[in-house]
Length: 355
Ligand code: GTP
Ligand code: MG
Image (cartoon, rainbow, N blue to C red; front, top):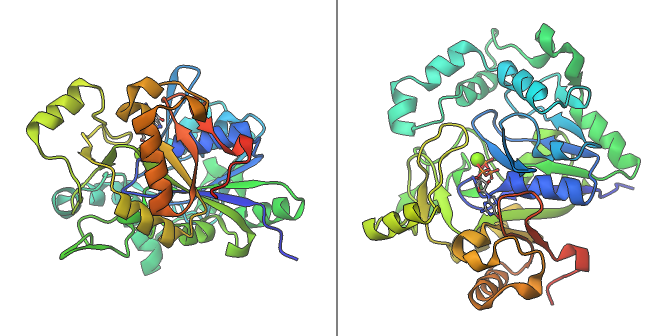
């Protein structure tokens, strides 16, 4: 019998929905002992705000805030060893980090290529070398190195899929952490006559199906799929962005009210947009989503800042949540009300399911 002990967390929009916050909260509140990161590589940055400290992570899983958690980097992820070793030191997680032996390694040449003219201007990538390293894996060139070839990574090597399988067999819960968002999947999306491919997409597919493969588990071990949305949408890089806010007055308001976002990896100003219920519905379908998480409700409705009880949410905020439930067909279970890990309304604690 296959045991279903895995929860996946994926982005429902263009990335930066706040997966870092949702994963860190769940890992801590539900004491997940195994947290595994999938995705492309250092091109994604999760932000965890813990005890007032802003902790950006580009390699280790956001679940590090649970000191009981083993932290895994799945085989699908391209590894930048300097970034990884830097984070292990900074967040003092040595001894509980595991890197799959077959993670491809990002080298200087990949970073240089990623900062070359095409990637920089046409694709407007993060310049982290993730795409070129992943491309080399696909091309199967002889000079690509893997984690197992790097001396400084020797203490961390593992077969991540095998370890997670063993945990699942022991009835231990596993949390899978996706990066980026549904609508920047390499497979592309069409919005009317505009396609996200090629300028608007990242190197890999970004949905829950690929997250399983990235961390080395089979889809039948998955018990639930949390799809994360942000109350105000954002996008980095080029490509179509329906509902993008272009009105200068509104953008000025956004900047002045602290709603403007800047990239975790690049510091670039993110393009901002209004919440798009249509996209939310599509994202739930493509990921087989069972639970909705909504972050930054406080950015839209400052009066909910720091709230932890659903019944304390006010009229317009409540309307937004109810509408999202109707459009997505799933329960909005986790609701972010501030940047800190614990600024969260958690209806799962009260066994909430949508009627
Ligand atoms: P990628 O993997 O790169 O897609 O990133 P991500 O989904 O982890 O999101 P990221 O951390 O890059 O961006 C989300 C931003 O929103 C961060 O600055 C978070 O600190 C912030 N954030 C997340 N949830 C909340 C919330 O509920 N309230 C507030 N005020 N900020 C939040
Ligand atoms: Mg991010």
